[in-house]
Image 1 (cartoon, rainbow, N blue to C red):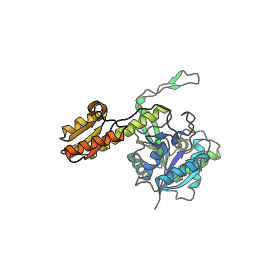
Image 2 (image 1 turned 120 degrees about the vertical axis):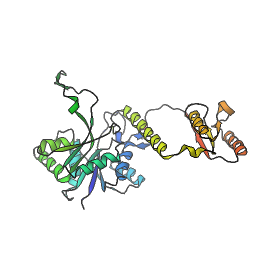
Image 3 (image 1 turned 180 degrees about the vertical axis):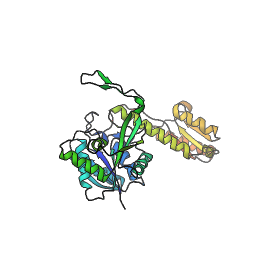
Image 4 (image 1 turned 60 degrees about the vertical axis):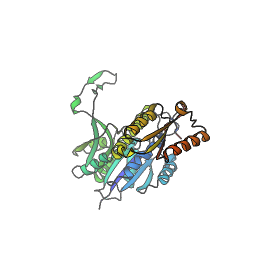
Length: 326
């Protein structure tokens, strides 16, 4: 049986990002960006094995992340090269003993919001084509310019797409294309599909629809956008999973329930016939920084309701510091 191999390209230096570590190791909602990426492929029932291509100085750090998460599908962490072309070629060398019919899917480590649907669609499309690209429509007009910055052409936007990763191939196809490029000493390409199109022009490269959520972390602002996307996804999952009618008859204590999200939660809980007790300086002089104050309040709630089903904390202190990249 032929395998489906995911190749996660993690050789970026992060020069445009501006941090001390490459952007794939920057923290996103408490985890490194690359952790989200690997986890999605690890949990996919379409992926049998995972290779990661990294700069030599980050091999050990990458293995630390793998071991900490106890991922089982990651079999190799390979040393990449200076350019993307070199990193892909490094992976192809490691795949030389695999069947030519192996399905190989290449993905940027800094696209952490890749979906299972995109992975599945790529793998399935390889049953009909030897190469697959992931694209999305362009909402902006695309402009082609000369070296001096003046417009040379404005293509029809209806036929234009923006490319993403992953890009997927039959191993025999991508290996042949890369070997031809190496022999011709051509290594300046923007993506792996570009190598196939240039070296094997007779090969049709199919496309599948990507996602606006599948963003590439390039600038600091992208981290903010990605975190908001994660929050939206989590909220959608919770809404789909929880029947709020189950709150009927429950007792909730909400710290910080006098304003903001805490107040909104209290209103929703009351609407669903829950007993809600709000703990805040404004309502009952509860000081969340004081352990005795918290214990006294919880004891008073227990005396009144005989139970506490849920305790929610929405109190926080905003500390503004540079983005944590450790």
